[in-house]
Image (cartoon, rainbow, N blue to C red; front, side):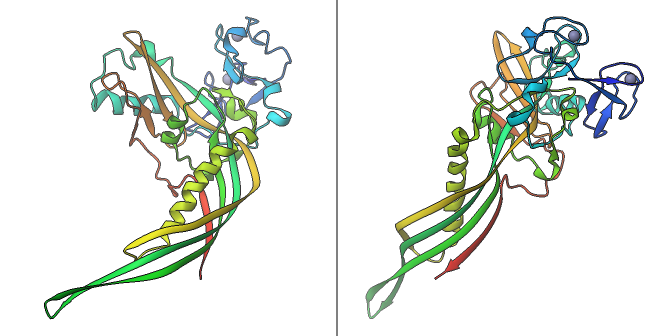
Length: 330
Ligand SMILES: [Zn+2]
Ligand SMILES: [Zn+2]
């Protein structure tokens, strides 16, 4: 589908700053007409140009390479492919450019072509497919702790070691543990772009995609669940270890965790991407489309992908997953 302005007929887009549909040509608000067609995979409904160059295997929203109209591929946001949630862009294109300029133009040497007029047009916002997993966990831990006491008396040094059995039972429920479902997006990169503030999640609606690129999930949720379980296992270890303190040494004897999958949500999260080509090498820069956090690889520091501190919104919650847990000290 494409969204057309009732007033001027232009391509009406979602405006991150206004948080609403806005015509970039005549500034009409919420005056969109939905134009649905089944032929988007073949040709642009606006200009008739072939669309094959703009549509890849997992593309769900794209831009006509000929006329620049933003197109949402209906059959890739329907049925099983329909997202439950979307986190709308809050960072506009101009804001993303400013954030990248601030970070890379001032602090680090960058070639003058970086973010000049010509290359800035290549920045695109993209909705990245994510699965968010809800798991309940129940863990049992058994270990041995020691406490060591030393003292001196009558010219002798004494050492007393006391041994303690440590038992923990912990019930921890994890909500919305995110795993990206895009093969093209490096996992490490998404981890750097997190956290996203899930309080801003909306029920999915195609209008949020107008003006952006989009991808549908590349793999089913079952195939990606192990990555959520990995994250949860690390969090469980952290919670258990955090509950054991005051010992000189702790030795684990036994630990097991039962996991129960409660729910899986399919959601789209917003990311700005800018590819800068310099001396034959492509450097990718990303901006979290919700928080403004900047991640990039600079031309002077090829090896490292780094997260920069460009967060413009104070996050209420820094954690990427909400955890509720109860612990029994036995
Ligand atoms: Zn208009
Ligand atoms: Zn077109």
